[in-house]
Amino acid sequence: MTKLDIYIVVALVLGLGASAIGIYEHHTGYLEGKQEVQVQYDKFKNDVTTAGIEAEKKRLVKEKNDENKIIAATTARDSALVRLQSIASAARASPSIMSSVPASASPAGKICFDRAGLDAAIQHYRIGIQGLVVEGDKAIIDNRSWLAAWPK
Image 1 (cartoon, rainbow, N blue to C red):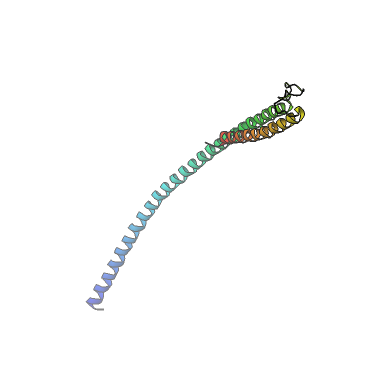
Image 2 (spheres, helix red, strand yellow):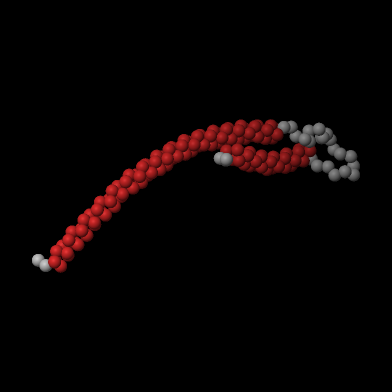
């Protein structure tokens, strides 16, 4: 073995030793960093889980409040519709506006209608108008109850 071979072997041994030390130091730092990252990850995971649980609780409370608003609005709507129907029924059953007009023939020079025919025509007109008014009132009641039940 020559001197050159000895130098080469010594250089290889020193190089391998230095590499081993470097790898050891790197691995030790990696393990310490890994533990630090794991701690941070676990903290993050716990924070996200806690925030998720809180958000779920808030969502359930909001859903319950919204459900109560919808029930209250629907109840108010139903009672308003019942009142409207009773008012419309009472209006349909009301006596004729022509009942106070005398049934006798009118004086000369005036155009007169048969009281029964005129009364029937006016009653028919009133029923048609009342139907439109009731339909409009129902739409208003529906819109108000829908707005009251809308989640805010």
